[in-house]
Image (tube, rainbow, N blue to C red; front, side):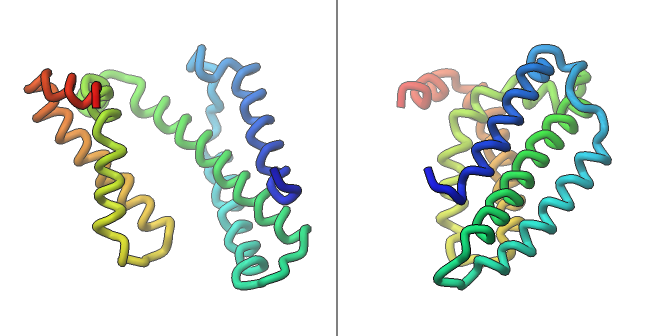
Length: 168
C-alpha cells in the first residue's frame, strides 16, 4: 500500500459500495442507463490519464501530488470503462440472439482456454510495440475469437478434452 495508490483504493471501494447498494449485479434493471454520460466520463478520464502520464513519464523524482493525480485518473478510467462495459453488455447482449447464445453455451470452454490463448498471443506479439490501448484491444478481441473457436469446435465436440483441461 502506498500513498500514491490511495485514490485507486478509494475509487474502487466506492464503486463496489455503489454497485452493491444499487444491486447492479442482482437486478439488471438497476444498472446505470446513461451510456453517453459514462462514455464522456471515460473519454475525460482517459484524456486526464494521458496528460498526467506526461508528468510522471521518465521523471526520476516524481512529486507525490503528480503520482496521486496519475493514479486517480487511471482509477477513474478503469472504473468508467468497467461501468460502461457492463451497461453495453447488459443493453445489447441480454436479449436472445445467435452471438449471445453461442457465447453463453461456450462460456466455460472460453474460460478454460482464454488465459493460455492470451499468453500465447502476448508472447507472439512481444516485439510489437504499438499504442498500449490498441495492443490491448487487438489481443482481447483475438483471444475472444480464438477461445470461442476452440470452445465451439473442440471442447463442445470432445467433452473429454474439456474435462482434461478442467483437471489441468
